[in-house]
Image (tube, rainbow, N blue to C red; front, side, top):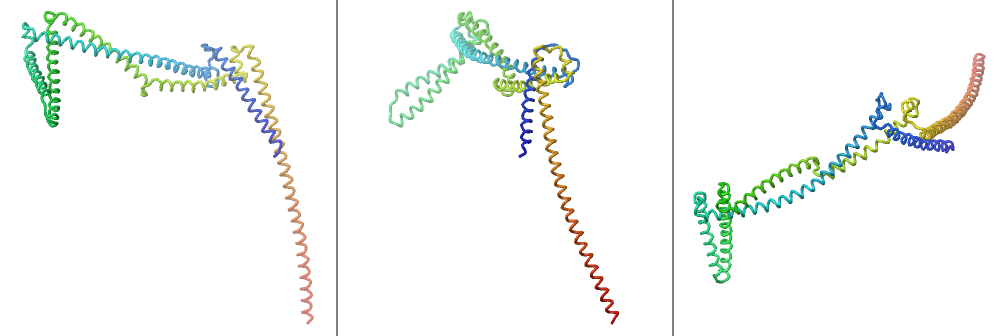
Amino acid sequence: MDERKNTIKALEEKKRTLTEARNRLFTELGGTLFQRIGEEEPFLENTSDKPGGILADYRKLQNEIAESADKIKTLEADAERLKVLEEEFADKENEKFRLASELEDAHIRLGKALLAAPDFEEIAGPSKAQEENYLVKIEEQEKKQEELEERDGNIFAWVGKNAQMAVSKNLLSKHRSALKRVYLNAGEKILSSGQAESLDKEAAEEAQKLSESLSSLTEALAALKVERKKITDSFGSTGTPSKRIHGLEKHITHVKGELPGVYLRLGSLLDGEDGRDALSSFLKEEDKPVLEKAELHKTQIAEGESEVKKIKAAINIDKEKAEIEKTKKSILNQKQKISAAESQISDYEKQIAESKDRIEELEALIKGL
């Protein structure tokens, strides 16, 4: 392999290394210039190849990063708030269950008191008859259970007894539950009539207090549900903040990956006179060594490119010379072929002449005869 090609390969690798080093210098300097510019608006032209346009692109990326970071903070705060809401919601649901149970007990107390009081027959109404009906049914089932428990017999009688006991227990449970509902309805009725305090002041006050607490708790739970829905809706279709946060973090990483390119665009403007003039007010003495080094790299790159062109030209010259030599050999070969052809032609012409002489001799012989 031609050693000069190895030299070209080495020079091109050196050019790549110098170009990368130069780009790093301009990238770092571009980032520094953006920091120095800050919130200023020093440029009039906003095209993509001018400082103003590049500054606009930089600020757009910075805003994207800031907005995404703010969204992440909001999501994290919402996630923490949702956790607290769920705990509050669970606590309030438990409290609601407890209050509802206590209120039910208070209503039942009032209901029993109402049906036991002779002075409230008008309010008690049909509830009294219902109470008596269920009390009779309960007594019947309790008596039946006692009879079944006392009954003896063989295995078949025992199986039948257990089946009857199960039916009886089920009926007893239903009758007791129905009686409880009668007392509950009666208690609610006397409380809503406004006469409960005259019947059982303590139970009436307790029921009223529990009812108010339950109402306030229900409103609080409704408010928590609204707030919870608002937060969960903000999480989007994923329903979880972690996925949205992960997506926003990926977006921030992507945008940050674009920033070095913008730094380089601004820093590279310093390679030209117009760019240096536009950015001169933001350059400092400490930037001079960086610019000088970048200029040195530029000179070294240009020298390397010139050397590569010279070597390639020398290689091409050698190729052309080789082609000339090849062509000369072809010409010589063709000339040799021509010389051989001319010699052959001369021989053919000589043969023709000799044939003509023999023809004349033969014609003369014919005439002499």
